[in-house]
Length: 329
Image (cartoon, rainbow, N blue to C red; front, side, top):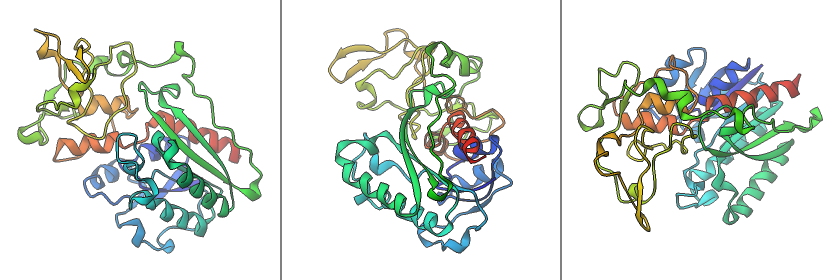
């Protein structure tokens, strides 16, 4: 089965679908800092690098079974301004729908942040839902936590999944393989073996040439916002949501949890300050479910954190893709 990938990033969603047996002949990503990484790890996908708003529907093949992708989520984020559909990035949903209407594949998947379902976006989500349905698709909207799908991370995301109405498919979002607490993965499960491999990034947080497996971490001061709450999870917990930023990356579990001093005031444990470092690029990649043979290529270390933090966790993408393939067959 063939799908096209939009807003592909470094290809976490793509990788999950590929592992489930889908082919991705064409993908689209506009951020030039990601192109090398995507091309290296997805050699069988032709990468279109233009702004999707300037691409005609003829830029993509017709003989496809699905469209997958996550339009930029910053404008919907709980932590952001939540401008939603009024923001130019939020409006990129319309280009997703433009291609969906033209190509009419058997299914589509669109992923976004949980903030998209906040009350202030009710009318915008209703409009988007109607647009999907007007293209001829039966739609499900599901809020999930990645920790229930083989991912060692607390990460809530919304998935819009639609099947073409003439197929008569009554899709049910899959239960996760680690839905039971006894099966959930922890930081110990996914990054324990990396704890003594970490090295700091080079001057100015540029890539350290000695980091041969992306085992470098962002350095620099911690902002007052960062220090407003605990940023450490223990070895036997799931990670916080991986952020698309090196400066705001969560801290490694080797350190004790930060101490409460007052409202918006957390501090490092005295005489343990040397234990507080950000997770490495490879560590957060593991948390997101990328295997060690997935190579991240960058000059600025922050670009690596950004592409990983914006990705769909690979195991979550895989479990969804398996379910979609089952319904189609």
